Image: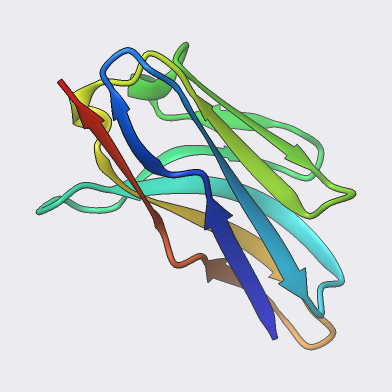
Length: 119
């Protein structure tokens, strides 16, 4: 059984910052890519950023320069530092990870954490 648990969401004023964390736990052999996605009300889920096990990073264009993704392989944790937040960043943020267990490789999702940016 593998679980991803996010934390760090909340309400912040425009221009503020938040740091999200996501911890993977369970019968994990190895974690490949870890990433963050978001889904605003009435919109499709979109990539925010992702990082490979060797720390190669991809950002969505609209997040470059404001968001920073990082991971700690020793803690099976991925972080998302969000600065200069805008009201349009309001969404549910989901953690995603490609995880190898004893039986398979598959993608897992966290339950999501709400980020609300007020103007």
